[in-house]
Amino acid sequence: MNMVLEVSGLTKQYDGFRAVDGLTFSLAEHTATALIGPNGSGKTTTLSMLAGLLRQSSGSIRFSGTGKDPRSAIGFLPQYPNFFPWMTATEYMELAAGLSGMGGRDVRSECEKTLGFVGLGDAGKKRIGGFSGGMKQRLGLAQAIIHRPALLLLDEPVSALDPAGRREVMEMLKELGESTTILYSTHILNDAEEMTDQLLFLRGGKLIEKGPLREVREKHGGSGYRVLFSGQEAAERFADAVPWAASADGSAVMISGETVTMEELLRFASEHPAGITDIGRTAVRLEEIFMKVVGKP
Ligand code: ADP
Image (tube, rainbow, N blue to C red; front, side, top):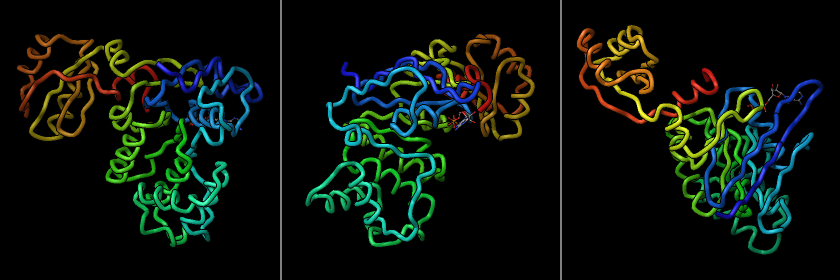
């Protein structure tokens, strides 16, 4: 497998405090990796170092792309991109293209094409000052991919969006993932679950778990159970009553498979049958793993 990025012992030290502490991982070509962790765990600091915006205190970052200028090999979407409100989307894209080392005659058509890809095809001549949050997020993504980077770094690319916007941007990222290596941070675990070849869990600046979703899942209980109810109230009552690790999610209750056998669950359910409509096995959700390895989000 071709590695695009190899990181070893990556550390960022502030006065007496390590924001990022000895990260070692690599990214294989055309894979998507989710960097997951609670607030303050070091996600932004890590991505900023990889993007070359922040100098590491120690450790190495080896980008084994094409030997090209890193500006042309990496695309970065910061969590809070700085836009100039008086610029039009096209002007901003042309600026981004220039900063990424692009030049020549096809810049304008590349800008148009990229704006089209992110769903801003009609907004090129409009000023960014009038853009909604979702439009700005798309524009942020557009500037990150204008130069077709080999590695795309995205800091919370969908957090600011509503569910429909998240879905659209995730679909775009999936499409990009076919030809690009992606590392993105998120605390929206459903999204990570949907698009990830590798998970990196951060806590207190340290990498406390890494691996493909399937492996991490197996390590943390593999599967669990889902009990469905006629309504949310019944689900919550059941979740409160079960003696095992359980979480209510709408009218469903998820129970970690590690702590209970099907027989025990069925026995308990027959003693507390109120509102139960279905009981089945389910794969452990990322959220449960997250709670286990990094604590509550
Ligand atoms: P995340 O993106 O996971 O929320 P960050 O990478 O932003 O986490 O921050 C990690 C930790 O580093 C936090 O505790 C934050 O307060 C601290 N931190 C970030 N930047 C600086 C800085 N310039 N000086 C000192 N501490 C910082």
